[in-house]
Image (cartoon, rainbow, N blue to C red; front, side, top):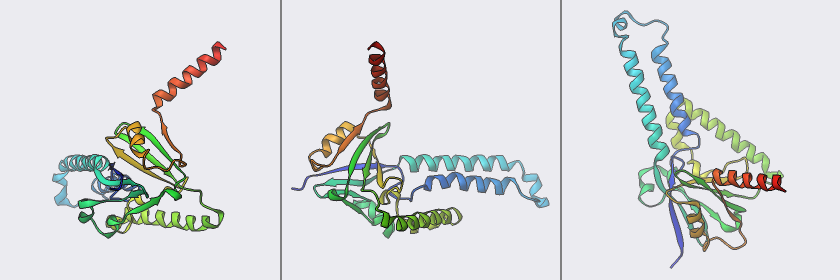
Length: 228
Protein backbone atom coordinates (compact mmCIF):
# COMPACT_ATOMS: atom_id res chain seq x y z
CA UNK A 1 0.00 0.00 0.00
CA UNK A 2 1.34 3.43 -0.94
CA UNK A 3 2.30 5.67 1.96
CA UNK A 4 0.70 9.09 1.95
CA UNK A 5 -0.14 11.99 4.20
CA UNK A 6 -3.08 14.38 3.81
CA UNK A 7 -3.95 17.61 5.60
CA UNK A 8 -6.54 20.37 5.40
CA UNK A 9 -5.56 23.66 3.79
CA UNK A 10 -6.80 26.70 5.69
CA UNK A 11 -8.15 29.76 3.92
CA UNK A 12 -9.33 30.52 0.41
CA UNK A 13 -6.08 29.73 -1.45
CA UNK A 14 -7.42 26.35 -2.62
CA UNK A 15 -10.44 27.96 -4.31
CA UNK A 16 -9.75 31.61 -5.08
CA UNK A 17 -6.77 33.38 -6.68
CA UNK A 18 -4.12 35.15 -4.64
CA UNK A 19 -5.26 38.47 -3.22
CA UNK A 20 -8.95 37.69 -3.59
CA UNK A 21 -9.74 38.54 0.04
CA UNK A 22 -8.40 42.07 -0.49
CA UNK A 23 -11.12 42.62 -3.08
CA UNK A 24 -13.89 42.39 -0.49
CA UNK A 25 -12.90 45.63 1.33
CA UNK A 26 -12.41 47.33 -2.04
CA UNK A 27 -15.88 46.35 -3.17
CA UNK A 28 -17.35 47.49 0.14
CA UNK A 29 -15.67 50.91 -0.09
CA UNK A 30 -16.86 51.33 -3.68
CA UNK A 31 -20.46 50.42 -2.84
CA UNK A 32 -20.42 52.57 0.31
CA UNK A 33 -19.07 55.52 -1.66
CA UNK A 34 -21.76 55.06 -4.29
CA UNK A 35 -24.42 55.11 -1.56
CA UNK A 36 -22.95 57.95 0.48
CA UNK A 37 -21.50 60.38 -2.02
CA UNK A 38 -24.02 61.07 -4.75
CA UNK A 39 -23.99 64.33 -6.68
CA UNK A 40 -27.70 64.98 -6.35
CA UNK A 41 -30.36 62.74 -4.88
CA UNK A 42 -33.89 62.82 -6.30
CA UNK A 43 -36.53 64.62 -4.28
CA UNK A 44 -38.34 61.42 -3.44
CA UNK A 45 -35.12 60.06 -1.86
CA UNK A 46 -34.60 62.84 0.70
CA UNK A 47 -37.01 61.47 3.36
CA UNK A 48 -35.19 58.12 3.21
CA UNK A 49 -31.75 59.44 4.21
CA UNK A 50 -32.14 57.80 7.62
CA UNK A 51 -31.84 54.43 5.90
CA UNK A 52 -28.24 55.04 4.71
CA UNK A 53 -26.47 54.22 8.04
CA UNK A 54 -28.51 51.04 8.39
CA UNK A 55 -27.68 49.95 4.84
CA UNK A 56 -23.96 50.72 5.29
CA UNK A 57 -23.89 48.89 8.63
CA UNK A 58 -25.60 45.82 7.19
CA UNK A 59 -23.22 45.87 4.22
CA UNK A 60 -20.21 46.13 6.53
CA UNK A 61 -21.46 43.20 8.61
CA UNK A 62 -21.90 41.11 5.45
CA UNK A 63 -18.39 42.00 4.25
CA UNK A 64 -16.81 41.09 7.61
CA UNK A 65 -18.75 37.83 7.75
CA UNK A 66 -17.58 36.91 4.25
CA UNK A 67 -13.96 37.73 5.16
CA UNK A 68 -14.06 35.57 8.29
CA UNK A 69 -15.69 32.64 6.49
CA UNK A 70 -13.27 32.67 3.54
CA UNK A 71 -10.18 33.15 5.72
CA UNK A 72 -11.06 30.20 7.99
CA UNK A 73 -12.54 27.78 5.45
CA UNK A 74 -10.81 24.38 5.23
CA UNK A 75 -10.29 22.30 2.09
CA UNK A 76 -8.84 18.89 1.36
CA UNK A 77 -6.05 20.17 -0.91
CA UNK A 78 -2.68 18.88 0.42
CA UNK A 79 -1.31 15.40 -0.15
CA UNK A 80 2.22 14.00 0.15
CA UNK A 81 3.25 10.57 -1.13
CA UNK A 82 6.38 8.79 -2.32
CA UNK A 83 6.40 10.71 -5.62
CA UNK A 84 6.16 14.24 -4.21
CA UNK A 85 3.62 16.84 -3.09
CA UNK A 86 0.16 17.22 -4.63
CA UNK A 87 -1.65 20.54 -4.34
CA UNK A 88 -5.27 21.24 -5.26
CA UNK A 89 -8.78 20.16 -4.35
CA UNK A 90 -9.41 16.45 -4.08
CA UNK A 91 -12.38 14.17 -3.56
CA UNK A 92 -15.86 15.60 -3.40
CA UNK A 93 -14.60 19.18 -3.15
CA UNK A 94 -13.55 19.09 -6.81
CA UNK A 95 -17.09 18.46 -8.04
CA UNK A 96 -18.41 21.67 -6.48
CA UNK A 97 -16.27 24.04 -8.56
CA UNK A 98 -15.33 24.76 -12.15
CA UNK A 99 -12.61 23.15 -14.31
CA UNK A 100 -9.80 25.42 -13.12
CA UNK A 101 -10.56 24.57 -9.49
CA UNK A 102 -10.30 20.88 -10.36
CA UNK A 103 -6.70 21.16 -11.48
CA UNK A 104 -3.93 19.65 -9.38
CA UNK A 105 -0.28 20.60 -9.18
CA UNK A 106 2.31 17.86 -8.69
CA UNK A 107 5.68 18.83 -7.25
CA UNK A 108 8.10 15.90 -7.68
CA UNK A 109 10.80 15.52 -5.06
CA UNK A 110 13.47 16.07 -7.71
CA UNK A 111 12.15 19.59 -8.39
CA UNK A 112 11.96 20.66 -4.74
CA UNK A 113 14.98 22.43 -3.27
CA UNK A 114 13.91 22.82 0.35
CA UNK A 115 10.92 22.42 2.69
CA UNK A 116 10.42 24.72 5.63
CA UNK A 117 7.71 24.34 8.27
CA UNK A 118 6.65 27.43 10.23
CA UNK A 119 4.48 27.58 13.34
CA UNK A 120 1.17 29.41 13.04
CA UNK A 121 -1.64 29.82 15.57
CA UNK A 122 -4.00 27.80 13.36
CA UNK A 123 -1.47 25.00 12.86
CA UNK A 124 1.53 25.08 10.55
CA UNK A 125 2.60 26.67 7.28
CA UNK A 126 4.65 24.76 4.73
CA UNK A 127 6.99 26.65 2.41
CA UNK A 128 8.11 24.56 -0.56
CA UNK A 129 11.10 26.15 -2.29
CA UNK A 130 11.90 25.50 -5.93
CA UNK A 131 15.21 26.10 -7.75
CA UNK A 132 15.87 29.69 -8.76
CA UNK A 133 14.72 30.83 -12.18
CA UNK A 134 17.65 30.87 -14.65
CA UNK A 135 18.54 34.06 -16.48
CA UNK A 136 16.98 32.78 -19.70
CA UNK A 137 13.63 32.29 -17.98
CA UNK A 138 13.36 35.66 -16.27
CA UNK A 139 11.70 37.19 -19.29
CA UNK A 140 8.90 34.64 -19.16
CA UNK A 141 8.59 35.19 -15.41
CA UNK A 142 8.22 38.96 -15.99
CA UNK A 143 5.41 38.48 -18.48
CA UNK A 144 3.77 35.97 -16.16
CA UNK A 145 3.79 38.48 -13.29
CA UNK A 146 2.46 41.19 -15.63
CA UNK A 147 -0.37 38.95 -16.79
CA UNK A 148 -1.22 38.06 -13.19
CA UNK A 149 -1.35 41.76 -12.24
CA UNK A 150 -3.63 42.55 -15.18
CA UNK A 151 -5.89 39.64 -14.23
CA UNK A 152 -6.05 40.92 -10.64
CA UNK A 153 -7.07 44.37 -11.89
CA UNK A 154 -9.73 42.82 -14.08
CA UNK A 155 -11.04 40.92 -11.07
CA UNK A 156 -11.47 44.22 -9.21
CA UNK A 157 -13.51 45.70 -12.06
CA UNK A 158 -15.39 42.52 -12.97
CA UNK A 159 -15.70 40.24 -9.91
CA UNK A 160 -16.75 37.07 -11.80
CA UNK A 161 -13.38 37.18 -13.61
CA UNK A 162 -11.90 35.16 -10.71
CA UNK A 163 -13.54 32.09 -12.26
CA UNK A 164 -10.98 32.25 -15.07
CA UNK A 165 -7.95 32.46 -12.77
CA UNK A 166 -6.15 29.58 -11.08
CA UNK A 167 -6.32 29.19 -7.28
CA UNK A 168 -3.45 30.68 -5.32
CA UNK A 169 -2.27 27.31 -4.04
CA UNK A 170 -1.45 26.23 -7.61
CA UNK A 171 0.73 29.27 -8.40
CA UNK A 172 4.20 29.75 -6.85
CA UNK A 173 5.24 33.06 -5.39
CA UNK A 174 7.69 34.76 -7.71
CA UNK A 175 9.84 36.41 -5.03
CA UNK A 176 11.74 33.21 -4.20
CA UNK A 177 9.93 30.61 -6.32
CA UNK A 178 8.06 28.95 -3.49
CA UNK A 179 4.65 27.52 -2.68
CA UNK A 180 3.12 28.60 0.61
CA UNK A 181 0.54 26.19 2.07
CA UNK A 182 -1.27 26.97 5.36
CA UNK A 183 -2.31 23.75 7.06
CA UNK A 184 -5.01 23.56 9.69
CA UNK A 185 -4.87 21.74 13.03
CA UNK A 186 -1.40 20.21 12.75
CA UNK A 187 1.66 21.15 14.79
CA UNK A 188 5.00 21.74 13.01
CA UNK A 189 6.84 18.94 14.78
CA UNK A 190 3.94 16.57 14.20
CA UNK A 191 3.98 17.48 10.52
CA UNK A 192 7.73 16.97 10.27
CA UNK A 193 7.49 13.50 11.80
CA UNK A 194 4.67 12.60 9.39
CA UNK A 195 6.63 13.79 6.34
CA UNK A 196 9.95 12.30 7.40
CA UNK A 197 9.30 8.80 5.95
CA UNK A 198 8.14 10.32 2.63
CA UNK A 199 10.74 13.03 2.04
CA UNK A 200 14.01 11.88 0.43
CA UNK A 201 16.98 11.90 2.84
CA UNK A 202 18.92 14.41 0.71
CA UNK A 203 16.10 16.98 0.71
CA UNK A 204 16.49 19.62 3.46
CA UNK A 205 13.45 19.95 5.73
CA UNK A 206 13.62 22.44 8.57
CA UNK A 207 11.16 23.47 11.29
CA UNK A 208 11.28 27.13 12.19
CA UNK A 209 10.53 27.57 15.91
CA UNK A 210 8.02 30.02 17.30
CA UNK A 211 9.07 33.64 17.66
CA UNK A 212 9.05 33.29 21.44
CA UNK A 213 11.52 30.42 21.23
CA UNK A 214 13.74 32.38 18.88
CA UNK A 215 13.59 35.42 21.19
CA UNK A 216 14.57 33.29 24.20
CA UNK A 217 17.50 31.82 22.28
CA UNK A 218 18.73 35.28 21.33
CA UNK A 219 18.38 36.39 24.96
CA UNK A 220 20.40 33.40 26.19
CA UNK A 221 23.12 34.02 23.60
CA UNK A 222 23.33 37.70 24.55
CA UNK A 223 23.58 36.81 28.25
CA UNK A 224 26.31 34.25 27.57
CA UNK A 225 28.22 36.76 25.48
CA UNK A 226 27.88 39.40 28.22
CA UNK A 227 29.01 36.96 30.91
CA UNK A 228 32.04 35.94 28.81
